[in-house]
Image (cartoon, rainbow, N blue to C red; front, side, top):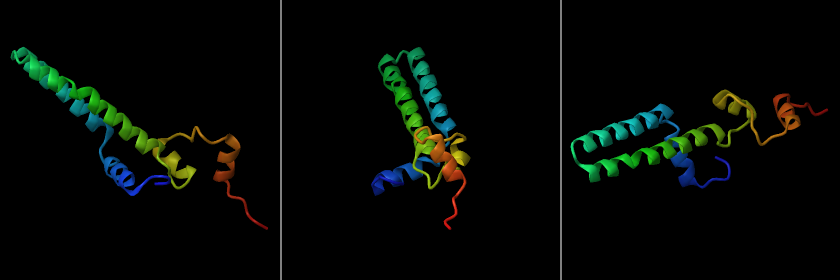
Length: 104
């Protein structure tokens, strides 16, 4: 990755392998376990486990952002992965990148 140290690059490359739905599933699972603990009368444990869900959802959001907006090699690679053009580039810059100019 551009502008990142090796640790950050390695973490992002590993987390890209986790599907986004996985984070949502784990968060919903935490909520279900929390509800079960609350019904079992273990309020302290229910609150403890229930607080995991927002953290997991935030990690899933970071994962999605890292997948979608990480620095790809070119705009074509970004379009294939994220399905949309970069918000940070002007339309002129995008059109220049799509049609390579020949040097005469």
